[in-house]
Amino acid sequence: MTEQDLAMDILIYSIDEKLFGVEIGKVQSVISSVEVTELPNVPHCFLGAINVHGELILVLNLRHLFGMPAKELDITDQFILCTIRQNLMALWVDDVKDIRHLDAKELISLEKIFQTDRDFLLWLKRKIR
Image 1 (cartoon, helix red, strand yellow):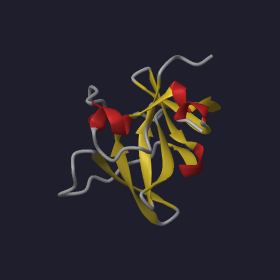
Image 2 (cartoon, one colour):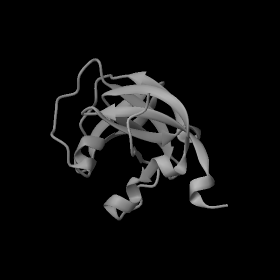
Image 3 (cartoon, rainbow, N blue to C red):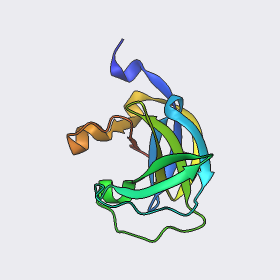
Image 4 (tube, rainbow, N blue to C red):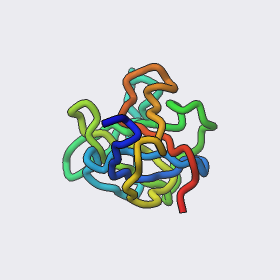
């Protein structure tokens, strides 16, 4: 079986009108944006942390990771709570669009683009309908 034969369920989200995805099996929930507490001495890729049911969860700033223009957190933004390397984290996104069953050939692992361990993030090669 080749990579092109594989398919997976993907939660599709947008940042700056560009579509990305994360495997649905890694997603715990999607929540509306809440106040983020800034943390000292954390890498710039983290916006800070949020409190979800008494648990402190780091918020990953995907805009910073992807080299996109910075923006202020908006009340319409969303957080995707997902497991990344056995840690629960929140991905800060503009909007969650859909869940789709997509072939691997329709996706690009951002790990290949950034040359780092970011295989949990996927970039959609084309617009979906």
